[in-house]
Image (cartoon, rainbow, N blue to C red; front, side, top):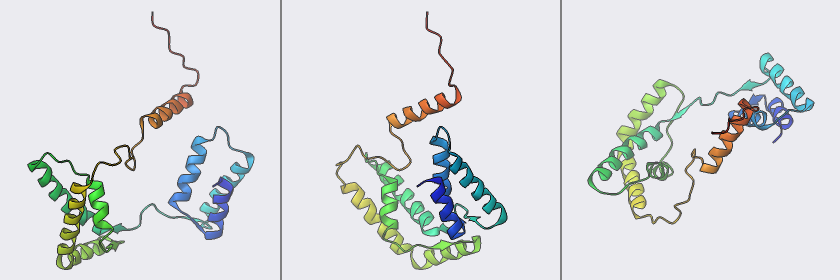
Length: 181
């Protein structure tokens, strides 16, 4: 999506979402030079943000308490298994599997989060333990079909080299290493 379209959408909705903000940042970071139209759109967006016509939505206004409860349970169980066997389990896969089978417990305040934690401990702890157990069993039985799969947030070696090359080019465009003698 272009900067102009993002700005038009933000003006129409009255909100600049974190995804829209990230996309504008990505475009600005990767473009060698912005067009006059892009600069004008960014200027329009800044004005709208300053006047309150567009509101920037904070990155996270809420938490899912279930995530911390599942992670706490999964970490304890995985650590126990890994300490008593030669198996290595994928904590991310286990947590995602269990979370997809449990109700979310969102909160927007510390008091709300404490309420959700208490509710979960009283009413949902058995279900959390059961789902984490199922996730561990699935993970233990999982064959290594796709060893080349990419973990979210991890970059391949080629991507890292490209990023480092881009950084060097941006910050040291005229640097030439001296030849070794």
